[in-house]
Image (cartoon, rainbow, N blue to C red; front, side, top):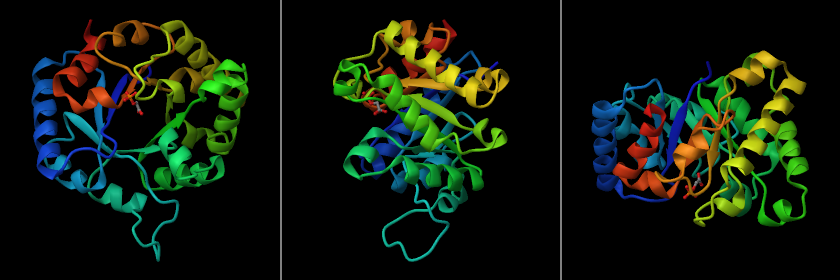
Length: 253
Ligand code: PGA
């Protein structure tokens, strides 16, 4: 059985005290209300990570939203995977479309970041997704395949098995437009097929593939009921404890 994960991505939101308060609410609600084996994770801005870890990684896992591709050194303003691990985080988002778009992160760079995250014992939540143009002109399978091949398929089978993939159609992020359950399932099945072709069926079966893009408490159940959707990466709705925990609880139903 592959892991079911609901991961929140706070993006560049929440001052220090707001983050502590929201996370405390989420931890308490998840502790009281969870009754399945799904895993909740919050990926927060760097300034929050240390204090969130003190509040309970046993109930809700903690991740960063990015890391630098080098181990350490003269990279002013950057944060390494080793530093993230050293505060007790278990996860890091790699290759979010906002990083690809606004910070010019390429597939090659993301492969380096994935390597360094794995080398430091972090689980990469590796994002792929097509733009609206690529969806409309029918090139999305090609685009996704290239992102997988360049970003992830250089990994050994042993390392690849530690990665979580998030399919996030760029046109659905923060727009209120969600991929339909059928559209998302089609892509998730495609991703799993590509993994099986590159590695093997067992690895493909074991890979957790999350859906992200305007996922909310209303549409989560239908999305998560699809055979190849193993949870979600949640942006906007992770900033409200009730919404986020309701999405986590979708797996209880
Ligand atoms: P959204 O963001 O849920 O606000 O669409 C998802 C994401 O960017 O991870």
